[in-house]
Length: 268
Image (cartoon, rainbow, N blue to C red; front, side, top):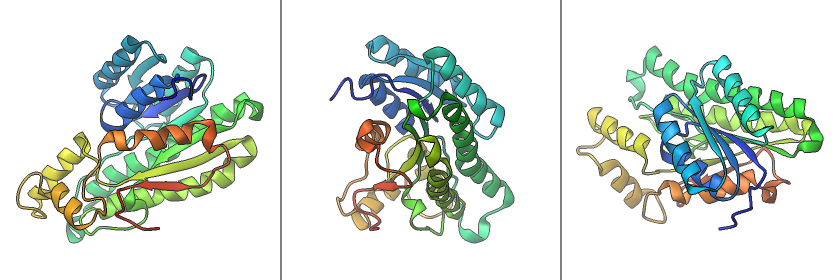
């Protein structure tokens, strides 16, 4: 690992208390970045920050962040700038899912998922971009990284609102790239497939509850066996390298792109 690859990068990460967000925060810090960790689970975010600071690599701070609230997004950006002096990278990772078959989708389910996964990304992009624009183009290129999904490229009948939200994330990658390029801000993203995290553990239980699968663990095993070319589901460590690439100078000549990290589930 290049321990100076992200040296001098000041990063805001949403949904950083567990799963991919936590793994990426630790990976970024190990490569020299300073990271501001936001999550509705404030205690979890602080625990990740404590691990990072104890490791003695990059610096970390943590705060409570509800991505559906503009004021929280603005406060997270301000906290990062106050702690580190500027903002170079925003990784908008916060997201959730709650499966329902198509005819069972109700307004509560739709609003919950779209508010966090789509509106939360829009607000995060806007507030990060405001700070980056204020800092001036000469300090860039700045990086906004949106977390999409295989569901940004296809749709499944038991998670339609989630798929809609991740299609929206892709639209914000391409639209944001066009809107912000003159400010020396690139907008890219990555799309995981089946990742064994706390989110998927809950999703697995929910899929059993709605009758999609018969027993816990079957969803991941079935998808690995029948849909993933590499015949295994992934872990957060399968994602962190691409996330670091998108935050680093290696991706300076990229914008408007979504990279799938799915073991070969969806062919573009």
